[in-house]
Image 1 (spheres, rainbow, N blue to C red):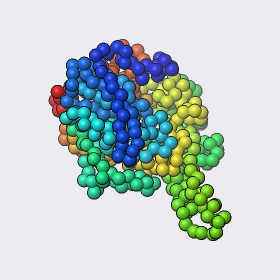
Image 2 (cartoon, helix red, strand yellow):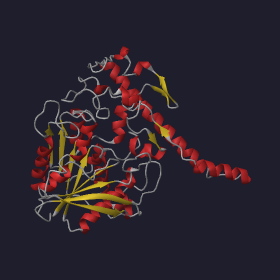
Image 3 (cartoon, one colour):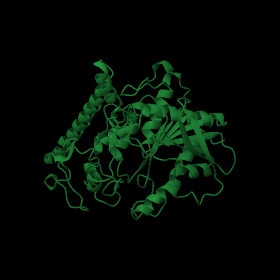
Image 4 (cartoon, one colour):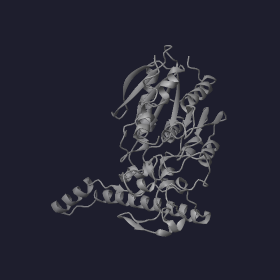
Length: 416
């Protein structure tokens, strides 16, 4: 069931079936004046003392599938959006921390005594980045984005979560980009100009016709992964060159014509158009970090991922230079989950989906190993990235995951 109807199910399953869960829209205003929207789910049994916040850099998590399930189990859950919901072309992770802080302050003002951060997919690196900065002495917090945009975290009231839950989390959007970007692109201005020696979709490199599994030589893969990193570094250089071009427009004189020319350069918003960003060899070669995953990517369900690599789809397609550096660059972003987890000591639960096409066993193991928490638990749940059943699977993974989370939380931060 990898169709549009399945995607609808991903968003709305359980919302019409769980009775008694009270839902209330919540609007919060960050310290810089930006307003964001959430949906608070409260349990049928009455007021909870513990509230969870679930948020993603760009996805709408107001109706996250776990929110009503956890509310049914006694927890309040605020599904909240960042300021960049549905459009991360200019997304600064550093400013998203202001949205999380405002949402947690709102929960605290509503009387919730214990706060928990729930990170799912890209929300894992975002919430961990927040917790790292919230537990850092204010004078030592970050003051700017990788592009130099100021972020006043030192003055920010940043409530600290008592526990963290990580579900189907990857190690950060920059690390995802490093894994999925097509290294065969030779020129960012000509997306068809290709180095066939590092093209995973070229038959000479082990590619088989879809939906046959492919097989890539392990030595070739090492060269492929190095080439992916090289392309990401080239994009870093390009992004910073655009920023330097903008800064250069601030200097000099040259009379009225010169000033007008500089003003135009200063106002021009450059964009990176990053073509071909769905090229992870593990999509087609199941022997790479084996798991229960089906062939392909969740971004092109049921289709050859080459469709998303060349056509609509993929990740980080149109970005400002600062958006690339803060969110999608593996070398410049601050939102690296494994880096953040080394600074976080609160109890942490990690839940891995066994059939996840994007997050596989080796990455999950590295994420868990990076956690500095003395109280950390890692579990697996059979299902795909969205915790929907795999092909032929009869049980529903979502209630099972909700039970695991609720039981784990109850021993550390009870709902009442």
